[in-house]
Length: 103
Image 1 (cartoon, one colour):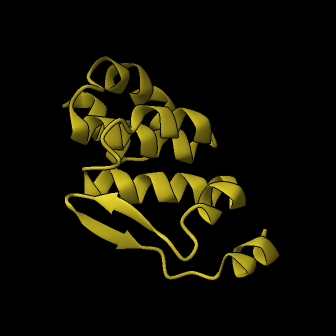
Image 2 (tube, rainbow, N blue to C red):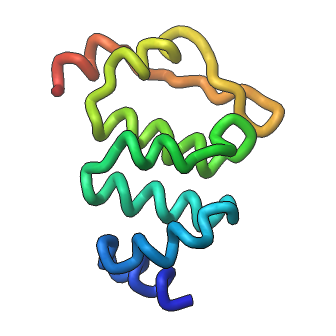
């Protein structure tokens, strides 16, 4: 509970150790990934999102990590395509050339 409190307060560095211990919980893994994103540790964020293909929240966080990192190539895979999410499809309605221009 303390780690989630620290996370909610934006004290990501302090929350990392405790969140890491519980990263098998999908909700905690998402919080951990968001902490990594806040600390510009995008590759670490992507690594903990083990359920990103079946968990919509983790899929969203994964896309957020790619966008924050400026990973145009990672996003390009989705351009005009789709990414499987929770038995459906998540469409990325974004022009990748616009992302390239903003980074």
